[in-house]
Length: 58
Image 1: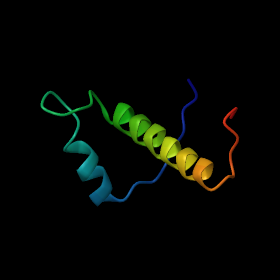
Image 2: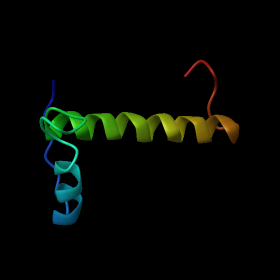
Image 3: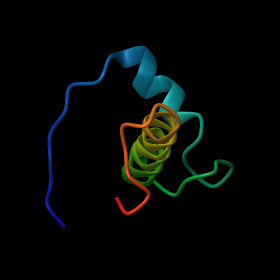
Image 4: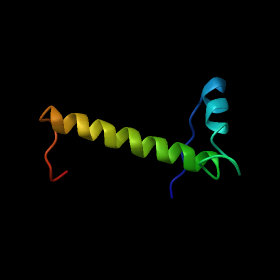
């Protein structure tokens, strides 16, 4: 799996950390970020479909 580096504001990282760990929804930061990216891209695809900018085949 390729690795990337990003700069994240401290307040966003603090919010991510609230959802990570034994009591959180994610086992680590990477999982939390991947899930967020997937959800965001799915939402954008839905918007594009509604606007007629994306074929159902894509």
